[in-house]
Image 1 (cartoon, rainbow, N blue to C red):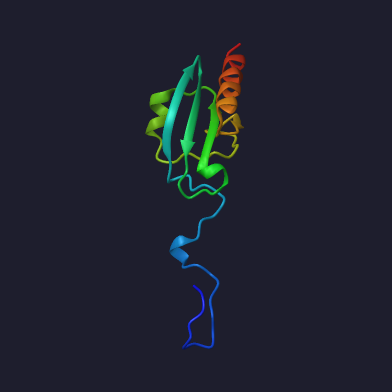
Image 2: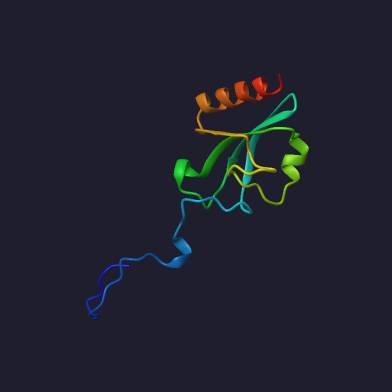
Length: 108
């Protein structure tokens, strides 16, 4: 990257190995913490390939348990008909508290 005094070309594109994309890779994740709330699990997950919010996501999974969530080989944070989160919130203390409340309400 940058200019070379011996070259007539320059490159402003970083090497491909350092390019990070905003979307998370569902196969590369680390579960930072979980909380079982009735039939739902609240989870904070870090996706190292994701750029927004430093790759952290707070999610609520309905009809799930912590052990099964931790055994998943992939964990897609996008909404889906089966297996995806029912809610995703900002990865802050406030977002975690709201996720816990949503999990509590979903068990009623």
